[in-house]
Length: 355
Image 1 (cartoon, rainbow, N blue to C red):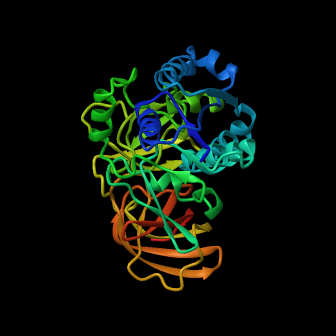
Image 2: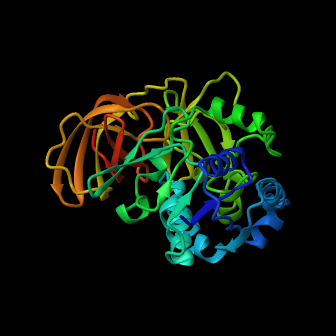
Image 3: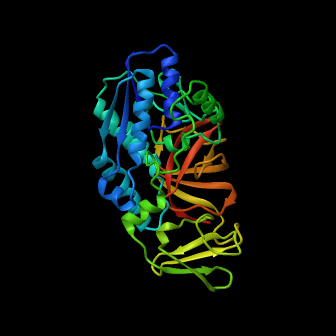
């Protein structure tokens, strides 16, 4: 069997490589996907992939596996960055990782290798189960690290070529394996960036593309101006971190795009923002459209929390979702991802909040 492994330089993908080698496979080649353009890096002031590449080389040398760097800068900008920037300008809350997986890691990369490999291995926390002629996407053992939310827009063809060796492990177990075999990156911290962005922070990414524009921060209950922000595009409904004001915690309640105003409150469950019913479109099912929607749960953001819900399919591409509880952070542009037990069934984009 011929296998391609996507290496990021991090611990997860390195342990994934080790586990596939440990299964006895030897016809393996690793790939590092380069996606950032030099103009952005010179603006931000560092080269995030040089450290990545040092670790990729060290890992491949340790296991005597060849590697190749593939440049997807143009594809990444056209298929992920441009979408993200447009969503932010419209005041929405995008999920770039969903499209990075669908369009770059398992889209452009699959097109590039053109069926040269029987299997593509990555360090994602998720499981793929074959059931008759279908491939099911399942949540990982580690429900905190589980990345099924970000993999929810993959197709049957993509899933049929993928294997996630970390799906049956806890993050703590992955770290232990890395230490037990003395991986060069065993103590490297996890990336907090988007996709493969590594050290590049989300706000730096936004600032480079949209700049800054001063605006007022207003307390929702009193109407008082209590601070200044650098642009509504840096904030999303329900946000708590990044509001640099005293007497916190503060929560973002809503945004006025025309006036560039951010409204905040101490009350996380402020009634104007806490919603439970909304419309989604751009619906994607990993398998066929379900015949019924009983016992479905959804996530509206990455994390452990799922909501019980009622789903009403209005058309093939329009659905009304009613949560069993209100959530203060529902925002257009986010994705609602569908689950039944531990299976991820697909997802859809939130575009209108009803009540």
